[in-house]
Image (cartoon, rainbow, N blue to C red; front, side, top):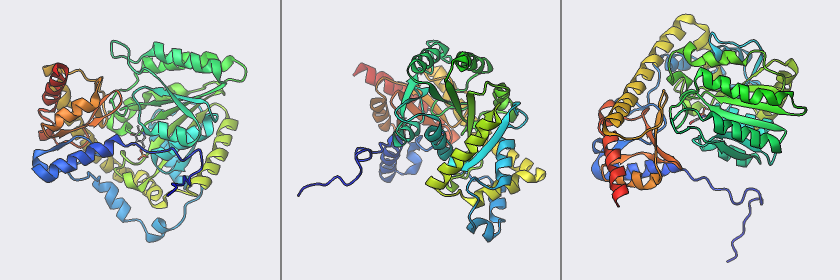
Length: 417
Ligand SMILES: Cc1ncc(COP(=O)(O)O)c(C=O)c1O
């Protein structure tokens, strides 16, 4: 039989390799043999409570269940409900609105926001720049939209933000192309938990700004803040956004907002892309191209989740109760991460600078070999290209104890072998 390839030439070689799914499957298999209590699943990327159930913030759930059926069933406007877009802008910046023009477009999760930024702010065939530790979906979206992902080395030898390599890569790419989209996932970067400091941000802006005086150059920065509400105090973690005041017109900032982690509403697929520019014309164009992309891809976005955010945010008492619950969930994730971090320091396990968020990363030459060794201890983590991802969001406090030492032992065994 002749096997026909029916997919169009540009699509037919595409195959999603999902390291997280594979690691989770290995864990499920081990649970079937040894029982769930004996197994540690550090592969899951959502917050689980101490009993291993999905953590859903009660005030969010109460407001969601109070929505009228018509609010859940009706279409939303293509760009999103106007009140939703206003709420998104307020929540994105809190007290740190830069002096600029703003706009927002509803999207299907943060993923949809990242998609729109890549689709509309990078030229076909050209490079998009992000760090070498990155969320794999950036690459998938680049391939899907005919762009190419290139990386700079995130950390220098002292495990600080590698400003020199960031500059090298920006310089190199802007020699070859007139426009550049840079994606920075901060704070609470996936998978390391790293965040750019105020001075790192100054350095980033100092590196790109000189290009804005060159004729024809256009630079866009997408800040992926998917985990920001698990990174620390609301205004502290957003302080860097003030630096986006009065930027040159050809330096455009976008921020991807997501309801997945911040509102424990992962599956409702609702987020937004927020635009920040000193130019009203740039923001008007953003509205136009975003509306077009929305219409083409999903027509419009989940209305119920948008209505939920509006109802939640517009009632001060309700929102305060919600924020209190989220703070407790953040504290829980942080306590789990602290166990790993402290134990890793004690046993001499090298890990990347964790400042907050769902994950901690341990660099490794052969991440799969270490993860396989860890399976002997019934601990399951995700082997990535540059290291191992440990989920602080989903491992209970009790099960987190001892993982670092087991990982160190796995490294030692693999090094000896
Ligand atoms: C770094 C990063 N950005 C964005 C997202 C987008 O999430 P969602 O599309 O669920 O909002 C994720 C989800 O895992 C992520 O890890």
